[in-house]
Each structure stands twice: as C-alpha cells, then as structure tokens.
Length: 296
Image 1: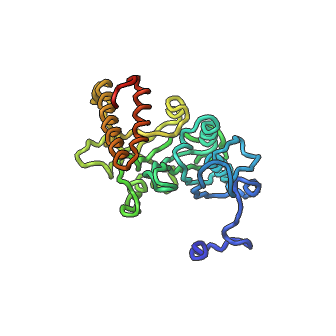
Image 2: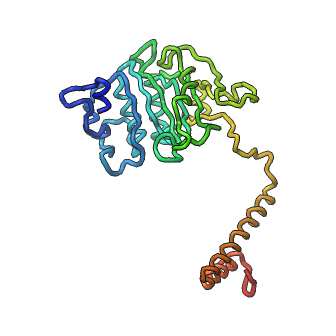
Image 3: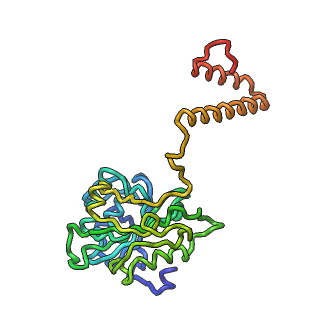
C-alpha cells in the first residue's frame, strides 16, 4: 500500500515480489542501480531467510554477511547501496574479513554511519549504515582496489539513550547529511570535522570530531581489514590510569560480595528457607577452604 501511494506499481506481479534473496530466487534477480536494505539478522537456521544459495563466493552461516555479498554482487556498474548492518559484520574474522576485502575491492565503500544503540533490531544491538558504489567514479567496471578512503560518522558515542520517550528523529541525522557530500552520493569533496553534538566547552579537534576519514592502507595494515573504527572517548568510561591498585579493587569487590551474601542469607531466613541457606553456606565455607567449625 505504501508503494502504491507513492506511485510505485511495479510489473505484472506487483511492486513487491515474495521470495528469499538468499535462495534460488536470488540467483535470478536482475542487477539494479540502487539498493536500500535492512536485512534480517541472526543465524542461517529456519524461516524464509535460510541461506541456500550455491553461487556466493564466500560461504557463510551469517545472514548479514550473505546479504552483503548478494547486495554488492547485484549492483550494476556505478550502482549505489545503503545497507543497515550490525557491528559483527564490521569485525567478524574468517569469511567476514574476506567479504569485507571483496566489498572494498569491487566497490567504493565511501561512508560508514555508526548509529546509536538500539535504533534497528532489538534493544542493545549496535548497527551501522554502509554506503558504497560499485566500481569507481573514474571506472564503473573496476573490480579491484575501488576503495581508497572510508569516511566514518560516529552518531553513537556520547549520544542519549533513544526510545519511546526520547525518539530518534530527523534532527539527529541532519549534521550527518550536511557533511555526507554536496552531490548527495558520497563522492563529492569532503572535509573532516563535525561537532554538532559536542559540548560547547570542548576544544574542536579531530580527536573529538564525529566525522573522520581513514585510508584503505590504514584499514588493511592497522585494523587488519576490520571496519569497527571508533576514536571518540566515552564520557561514561573510567580512565584506567585513575583506578585504584588491583588489590584495593579486589578487596572492594570481596566486601560488596560479602554484604550481598549476608543480605541473601537474611532474605532466605525471612522466607523460611534457613535449611537451604545453611547448605549454601557450608558449600561456600568448603570452597573458601575455611574448614569445619567456622561460622559463615
């Protein structure tokens, strides 16, 4: 209905075709100019999204990696894609590394947008939007070394927790849209530096900019072809240099644990489960090597 309301009537079968792109149907799909996708996530087991294709170069049980292969293979030379993918696609080793290398060879992976946690999929799941073009602006049929630089916009670090009461809105994307590129395709002139969500008292330098560029050489040599790239310091993180000595931390942890056990013991007694509490206390005494006759 949404498609019809926007004048998209499709062919004799309609505008939406029912089928599994990771099955035999996917092998016969025509190449396209643009792909906008939010592929399902999870393992390959069950449902219509099972992976049964035998023509994908890199065999994987990861649906997102399989969809990523399908998407960049189905683009026409010069075709563009924007795909929502979870963090594991950016750093998964083995076939994941091979697929990312193949993507950066065959396509210009020009932009990664790191989204706030929980925007897509389940709460707590971290996602990104990958923007890429098949080939290069100079040679749309190029299938090696297409990616020279990857621009990353971090819209995740030090952002508020979004939900029903604090919805993620259009205003949160406007700063990214402003720096994405003048041509709207991610291939125009760009400049590092974006501080729309930075505290006004913070010095504006690349270390706290949300918009930075990383060369293909850096991704290969320093990141081992992982695309999980972050640099902003989390304001809620604790500086390791300011932490107490390990023995102090351990003692504090033991103290908190002891107090928690004491409260649980009292709760069990109040619930009339003193016998169960005694069994657990005897077991704890044995684990700690306290021996018989020691009151825990």
